[in-house]
Image (cartoon, rainbow, N blue to C red; front, side, top):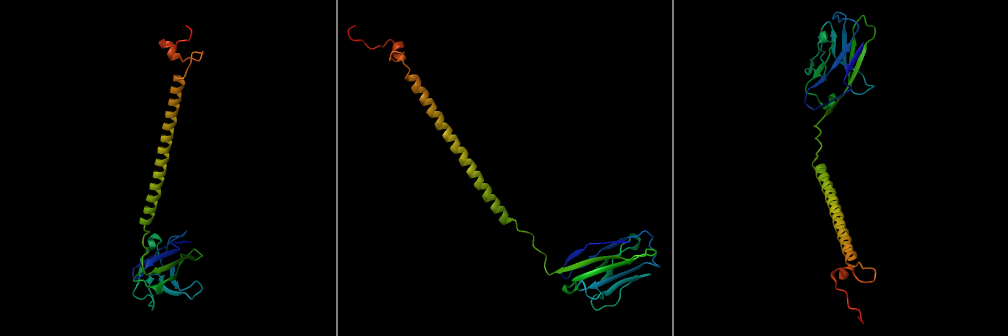
Amino acid sequence: MDVTVAPKVIKLNGTSAKLTCTFNSCYEVNDKHFTLNWTYQVCDNCTEDLFVQFRRRVIIPRTDRFWGRVEWSGNLDKNDVSVTIHDIQISDEGFYNCYVLNPPDRHKGLGTIYLSVVTEVAPERDSTVAAIIGASVGGLLAVIILTSVIVKCVRRKKKQDLQSEDQKREEGGKTDGEGNQEEDAKEGNLPSLPGL
């Protein structure tokens, strides 16, 4: 006998809480022999209070805690023995035990759900601050990258300008091997030598 439940259910005060409990058995369910007990405990070691049972039919005992608020939500044909508690209160918080026995199975199945009742729904995380921080950091990185690119471009341009000036000087300062500039020799503007 395997019983399946959600280990924890969180519900808002004043709403309805469906406590889902399903089971698997090797044998077909016979409602004449099938038994079910739903019990409630304030704490793990506290006394269990019976609030729903199945003995040939669903029985909801009159209890001070749950009277008028418990509804059968199961379907034995689908191996579902769920219940719903309406108008849940903070005092309903605790452990809900689903005991199932389907003879000829010899072992009783058990599923325990912890119901947590909250007074307000937790707000969704506000992502505005995260978006502002992300945009600021992204903008700062963009400025840094842009600045470094501009600085590299300016340095490269200066370097190219210096190299072209050096080339011009080298070309303009070439001589013919006798200390005379080649340009003057080519143009025929050689200085007059004394005594000639």
